[in-house]
Length: 276
Image (cartoon, rainbow, N blue to C red; front, top):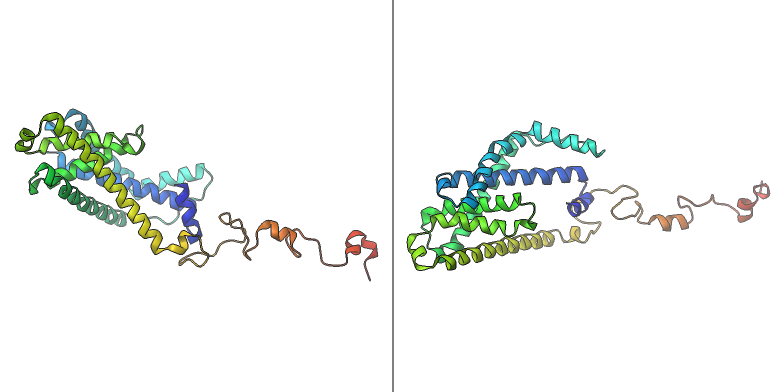
C-alpha cells in the first residue's frame, strides 16, 4: 500500500485518498465474492464438505455485514475517524451510493467472467456439465474468500486450494469419481487449485506490465508524464525544489536559501568597512 501511495502522489492524489480508495476497493471485492459464493452454493450447502461449509456460513454472514459497512455514511465516517486519529486530512469527496452499486455490479460481472474462464480450464479434466458453471463460480469465489480470511496464511496459500477442492467435489459427475480413485482425484483437484493460482498471478503480472507500458514515463517518474500534477517547491518524493535543485545545491549556490547577502567579502566580515 505504501508503494502505491508513492506512485500516485506525483499525480496530485494524496496518501489518505489513495489508502481509503484501496480499502474501499477491497471491501467491494470481498462483498462481491461472498455474494456470488452464497448465491451459487446455497443449494449445496448441506452436502458440502465440513471444511468448506464453515467458510460458506461465514460468507453468508458477511453479506449483510458488508452491505452495512459499505454504506457511504458508515464507511466514510469510520474512515475519517481513523484518519483524524492518525492526524491526517479527512476525505471530503465521497462516492455516492449508486456509484458503489454500479462498481459492485462491474466487480460481480468480472467475477462471473473469470469463473467462466475457470470452468473452461477445469471442464476437460473433470467433465463438468455446462449448466454447472455456476457451481464452479461459487467454489472459486468461496475459495478466494477463505484465503482472504485466513490471515495466518500468506496470500491464503493452501487454504484457498483446500476450500476449492472441498467445494468442487460435490458437483463432480459420478463417472469421474468412479474412473479416478479418491486419492488421485483429490490430488488432481489440489494440483488444479494451484494451477489456477498461478494463472491469476500471471494475469496480474500481465496487467501490471501493460499498465506500466501505457504510462512508461510515469513508471520511470519522468516529470513530463501525462497527468502529472505540479509538485510543491520541496517535494518529498524527489527531494528537489521547484527549480530542479536539491536543498544541498541551493544551500551552496549563490542566492540559495541559506546564502549570505550579496556584496563585498570584507563588508560581510566587518560591517563597518562597507562602502557608503
